[in-house]
Amino acid sequence: MSTSNLSDDSLPAIMFLTGIPGLEWAHIWIAIPFCAMYLVALAGNAALILVIVTDSALHAPMYLFLCLLSFTDLALSSTTVPKMLAILWLHAGEISFGGCLAQMFCVHSIYALESSVLLAMAFDRYVAICNPLRYTTILNHTVIGKIGLVGLFRSVAIVSPFIFLLRRLPYCGHHVMAHTYCEHMGIARLACGNITVNIVYGLTVALLAMGLDSILIAISYGFILHTVFRLPSQDARHKALSTCGSHLGVILVFYIPAFFSFLTHRFGQHRVPKNVHIFLANLYVLVPPVLNPIIYGARTKEIQSRLLRFLHLGKNLM
Image (cartoon, rainbow, N blue to C red):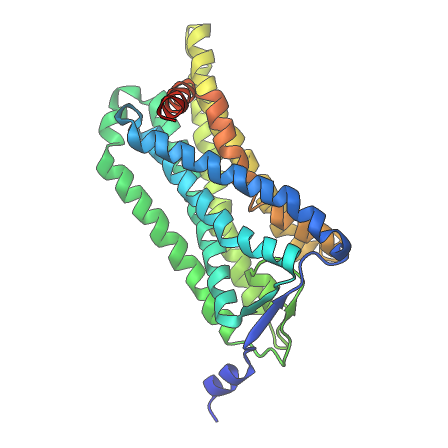
């Protein structure tokens, strides 16, 4: 029998997600705020997309990137939260192995894409503040489309090997995973074989994707701050900083939970309780989609005014 057949035979047909271990008694109560957060994320991001798409005055690069960010937030939360709620409320933890791999692929590729979008938004702010006279020339719609396609290609290219790395492992009948959704290392740790390659590749992807993106974002903001503090007018400095405040808030909301979850999964498993780690893993697919539209809606006057006008028109039509 070939190695590939042995590997296929050892793959579990069904996986079972248990939810948050040690907090089974509280699953029904935990699901209530999770459901509320998901509904807020759906409403907030859908409203942002609708306002930006329907208003030609908001087709500037900053808002187009924000629209793409909202799309990734909707995809990230919708890939994980419905199944999460089914597990917590209905104990519906069964999922096919293929379905588990598909969910894992979507979660990691969308997360990598969102990191690319945040990097593109940092580049947008860098050009707008450091090279404003060439802003519309550098960031035209063609360039924005290419940036989006490159980010999508990169995320798919770096996450696709996860599928093959997981399918090559023997699982020896292990199919119960203490989690609310499928993710790479959670599946890999069920294997009864050597997962060193999975660990090394997962670490490499995190460092070369989100790690590199965060470094480039930090460098771009270093140039931005250097330029801002050289502006002669205090009002100009305040305006420039305020345009970056929303983006910095979104960056912190995205990267802090992600890096905490990543580091505890690989280096702090014996120091951080399993239920705490999984609870935080749930939050990092919920908190950014909830807070991103709130942060931008609260700090961006153009979006505020158009959203209020849109809601006012909706009331008049009712």
